[in-house]
Length: 574
Image (cartoon, rainbow, N blue to C red; front, side, top):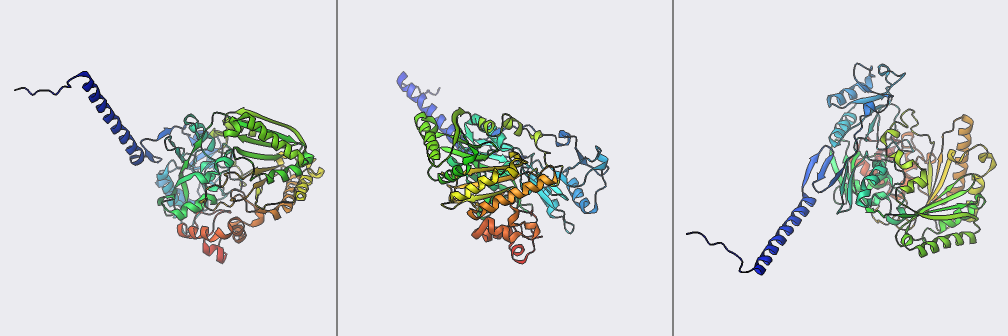
């Protein structure tokens, strides 16, 4: 006997039954998707990628063909010095190429200082670390670089190897969670560009060709600093290759001691960071761009006023800088939120800023504000082609490999203004010094770039901000002295630099970790005590304890790196 099928008695019952089935399928699909977004993963060459992540492709670079001044080292090309050969042999045994700059246009005459290695993923990075860290008894110095942007030269070594991370270029976006996983070879401009379609942005970084590795471990101020904080506030996880070759995660939940010290020390003191997970912020369609020109004769009055408003200025003024030039002092800033969307409030705030400055004796030449998309902030800050050029890896990857100095700058120095009051007389002295005829007649503004970034707002809002020494400070002054194209000019630049900081240093605390402040010493020249005391203060033993735990043999070192406790106390750092 045939089975009777169950049929709904009428169309209304049939409708409800179909609706219930549809709802059941939808709920199951949603739960299935959420399950995989949080728990399911698959291995790729660049690490672990969630199935619900959206990968953003970046063109791979053939480094052997990128520039005619580089050649790949093979045993038939160059006679490798004895203290290099065991490392080169080790790297070759792991199928990892070593590159050198050409000498006299011939690969048969390779320059052997330094050698470059370009790991493509975490696995290759492990192999590189094991070859370099296990190179005793003839251990050769090496450095790690992400974007080749270290003003202090921490990513360069004249004799040894450079581990260049520029091929680690993964960008994996989690739009729902507002998170992104970045390989440390990604430049911050590339990250902004990749996230634009999701209406999200990384927090921190206003120079588009800076590498994510250094920026996310050194500090990371930028266009959104006063609104959302510095980049290290947004780090959720670091993937790190330790000196042992072990790969670990450092986060709030894993290896917390390593996580805390990575946020603010920079310079690869503990291992090689390969990937960073960041919390993202919202990207608005348009921003307000503020530009104020000030008569140079009232620069002192403006700086005095500028530092005083850090705690009262709305954090919708996302960032605001003062730049010193020869013919005027320039103020630039970006506005968002209510301060941007409410034109009446915007005009009122800007007008009050101008009026209050005038009451302090500041001579305002002009003040303008206009709407721009986020990427245009670079155009108005650094020039029309700054963004497009700096996200092109070919434009900068060899820019500072050709000389041991690593940078066109010499002794970039910064200092935080953390006191409640700096006398007007101090800023007036800075004005007279900067515009003194003996300097202005012979030096261009670019020879000694000078700027001030205002803090306040939410700059250091995260209580767990690692060891970044800027919390509670109002502003940061920075000078960028060039090396000078003649000995006379170089001497004059250094004289300017020394006199500038003689005036300001008594009123500053700490310094940005990415800059080399020679007055406080170098780890590799016996100056580690002064350096640690100046940069870290009471936190110095917390930092050195982590160094002693994760890199007890001090394998990862440069002239700004963290010393072990024995190194610090027994003067064994050199």
